[in-house]
Length: 109
Image (cartoon, rainbow, N blue to C red; front, side, top):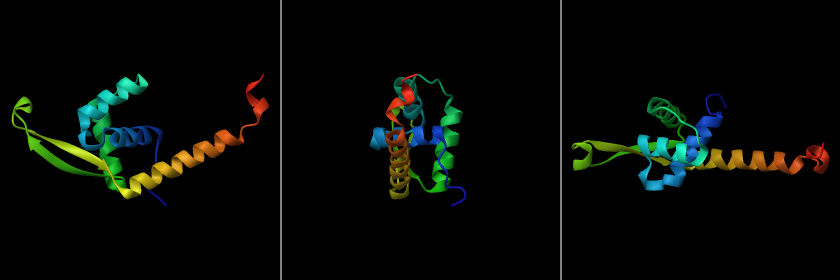
């Protein structure tokens, strides 16, 4: 289906949104990516990926409560949708099937 392909970075962002569960917002996703993968990404790159995932129906967003530490601004929080869960499961299955199909001798050069 056109427009539903999940790129490597989108998959990483979607997995991080799932990991952060109810606290997934731009900066938290950016920090978790750096912590878990060592990749330094800009906040605009994270926001672009979140926007693409939203357009594909893999995440949904809502505004959290305003906080004093954010100067009264609200966080835009993301959660994985059932479609997002489905595409992650498909991706995991494909990767696991490929790993399981590698002949044992393939890594013994």
